[in-house]
Length: 465
Ligand SMILES: Cc1cc2nc3c(=O)[nH]c(=O)nc-3n(C[C@H](O)[C@H](O)[C@H](O)COP(=O)(O)OP(=O)(O)OC[C@H]3O[C@@H](n4cnc5c(N)ncnc54)[C@H](O)[C@@H]3O)c2cc1C
Image (cartoon, helix red, strand yellow):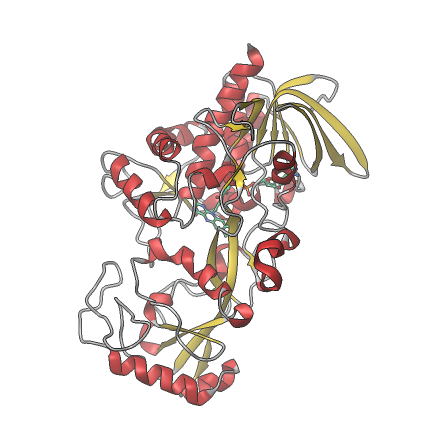
C-alpha cells in the first residue's frame, strides 16, 4: 500500500522495463520505492509490453544464444547503425553492463527462450523473453511487489517541483483528484514523446498526422518536457526516432508487433506515384528495418507499397491484415489506387535490371540489380509470378530519441554542465545518449535494463546517504 504521508527514498515515474529495473535495483539496494505509472493497470508497461527480445554482449554461446557476441562487435554494430552518433563512454558502459544483465534479468524471475525465426536473424545476438514482453513485465512487477515496492496505477504525473536540479515532489492525477508524492530522489523512466502528435508536428509538420504509433498512447513526453523546461540538458535530435514501415491499416496506437512488415527485402517498394525511392537490399534486415519508417515519412502523403509476387508469399511473417492481391501488375495498381502504366514500367525496369545470383536473405547475397536507380544491392529477384501482392505501409513510430542527458551513474546533467542533485533517467527518455540515430534490434530493452538498474542503484545510494 502506497503511503503518501511518508517521504520515499526513490520515486520512479513510469511503468515499463526501465522503471521496473530501476525500482527493483533501488529496492534491492535497501531503498523505499514508489512507482507512479500513468496507465491503468491493464495497460501498464508502456512500449515494453510489445517487446520480444534484448541485445546483450556475451563471450560464448549460451543455451539459447548460438554463439559469442563480443563487446567489441556490439560496439561496432552500434557505431555502424548510428553513423558514430553515440556517446562512446556511455555506449561502452551499456554494452559492458549488458553482459551481466543477461543473468540479472533471470535473477528477477524472467526466462529466456531461443530466438524466433524469420527475417530478423537474431539467434546469436538477441535473447527472447519467454512469453514475450508482457510476460517479462508481469514477472518484473511480481518481483518488485514481492520486494515491497509500492506501485500506483492511473497515476499520471502532471507536475514536478524542482529547485535548482533537485526534485522535491511530484503531483499526479488519481481519479478526479490530485495527489502529491515526496521522495529523496527521482528516476524518470516515462518513455519518449512519440504518442504526442502535436509535439511531433513541431518537427514533422502535417506529415505527423499520417504517422501510426506502434506502442502505448501514454508516452506523451510530459515528464521529458518538464525536465527540459526545468534546466535539464537535452540530448538528441528531436526528429530522430525509431520508425519502421507498418501496415497502413494498423490502428493509430498500440498496434504492436503484428502490424510490422519485414518483407521489403523480398520485393520492391514504391510510393504513391508508383516509383521506387530507395535500395530495398542495402544491408542485412536487422540493421535496416528501422530506417523504413523514416523513408516512408519522406514520401508524398507518407504512404508506400511493398510489391512482391507469389514466390515469396510464405517467406516472411505476415501482417495481421492480408496483402492486397491481383493477377496482373496493372490490376494490382488499380487495387492500390496507383497509376497502372507507371507501376507496370517500374516493375518491368526493375525486372530488366536484375542480375542472376544465388538468393539467401540471411547474408548479403549476390542477387543485385544493374542499371536501375535506385539499385537493389542484394536479394533482387524478378517480380514475375502471379498472383501479385502488395502491402500498403505507413511510418510506424516506435520511440523518439530526444531525451535528457545523463552521466555514467544515469544521473541527469543540467544545462550548466553539472549533475542534477537527485534526478536520474533510464530507458527511452534518455535513449538519445546512446542512439543519435539508427537502431539495431533489441537495443531499446538494453538501454532500459542497464540504465534502469544503474539509476535505481545510484538513486538508492544518494537517498540513503
Ligand atoms: C511494437 C514494439 C515492439 C518493440 N520490440 C522491441 C524488442 O523486441 N526489443 C527491444 O529492445 N525494444 C523493442 N521495442 C522498443 C521498447 O519497447 C522500448 O525501447 C522499451 O520498452 C522502453 O522502455 P521504457 O521503460 O523506457 O519505456 P516504456 O516501456 O514505454 O514505459 C514508459 C512508461 O511511462 C509511463 N508514463 C508516461 N508518461 C507518464 C507520466 N506523466 N506519469 C506516469 N507515467 C508515465 C507510461 O505509461 C509507460 O508505462 C519495441 C517497441 C514497440 C512499440
